[in-house]
Image (cartoon, rainbow, N blue to C red; front, side):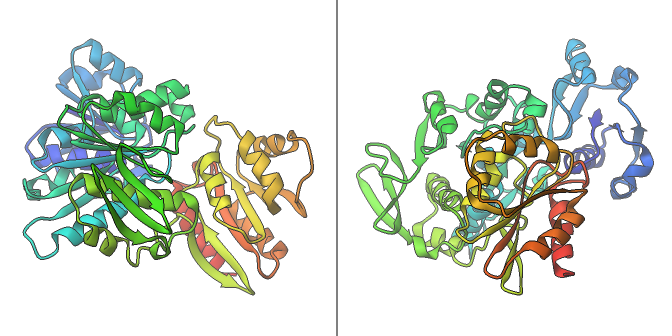
Amino acid sequence: MVVLGLARQGIALTQYFAEGGAEVVVSDLKPGEALVEARQALSDLPIEFVFGGHPPALLERADLLCLSGGVPADLPLALQAREQGITVTNDSQLFLEICPAPVIGITGSAGKTTVTTLVGRMASSQYEGTDSRAWVGGNIGRPLLTDLPNIGANDLVILELSSFQLELMTISPQVAGILNVTPNHLDRHRTMEAYTAAKKRILDYQSGDDIAILGREDPGAWALREEVRGRLISFGWSDPGQGEGTYLKDGSIHLRSGMNDMEIAAVGMVELRGEHNLLNVLASCAIAAAVDISPEAMVAGLRGFHGVEHRLEFVRSINRVDWYNDSIATSPERAIAAIKAFEEPLVLLAGGRDKDLPWGDFASLVRQRIEHLILFGEAAEKIARAIKSVPGPYKFKSFEICDGLEAAVQRASQVAEPGSVVLLAPGGTSFDEFKDFAERGAFFRALVEGL
């Protein structure tokens, strides 16, 4: 079998098949010297490597072609494999085919890592002191394929699924959550219709016995309610009426299930900034309810949860200026949510690489809310044009472009005033300067710690 892409998922696929006795060939577009760490992780396995391209000859001995998450499903070699009758799959498809435990799958344009982590905490609280275990993984950073021998039928798997993984899949988890569907990854999917179709696949193969969780506040997610084959549980601000779901009432999170209405927790328990994170908590409670996690376990999971790194992560305060890292904001929509989480005067660091997404709403909000705007990276000029094209007044005291993130941080430290917040919410990906958003966030933290 052949694995394309030597990132996390590619490594997991390779280990799984090689340890099972399969003959494995791994191919990556990068040269071998750029993948030393990945090769070392597989050094004790009998694997053939092909670097610098994906030659058609790879298919000569292949009976299975597995794609890592960053490899497009319409790659010429993948199309050729299908024409030859070779199955094209990925780690998530294989995992769902084999996993003995029930699986919760969580997707969305934003918030899925926070929700996956929080549901995992709630499930762990539910199973504390029992023989069952909650397994958290998938696109969140830990492929669970190699953990399959240890996963039991009475366990629970909480799996984050990206559109890249879903576009290949012909199987759905028993519980499927779609948090929101807003413009993202259009550089990969090309159209919003194709991107939405990829997200919708998490529902497409469910049965009448399965459960779907949808966000009522997001038009993209809520429009998919007609696609639900089984039970629907929703989440949003107001009472779901006749339907099941979570909502807010009198300063508390409530769950409506049939004729029952129960209070789960006070909103004051939520230690995450921003309305978008309160929606993430409502989503987590709705998903937890779908698998009969008790309100007590939901509260235990929520208690002390300060979020996931690189997601509105507080770094430090310097001379009464608070610095926040939201490197995960790789789309304008996510950057907008980050900006709205603050009422303080803002110094915004935005940029990176554009994903062919619209910047109009971001530009309008930035003109209204940002006192000092510092742009960096490949997308800087495009963002600047979008902001300048919006008519009307603006709040800027300064507006400039820097060569990279390090220069942007230095400039922010010079213009930030006591009582303000410096926010890294790029709106673009990190690939112009970094390996991924986590590397960008870690570099930002290091720069701020060094000020």
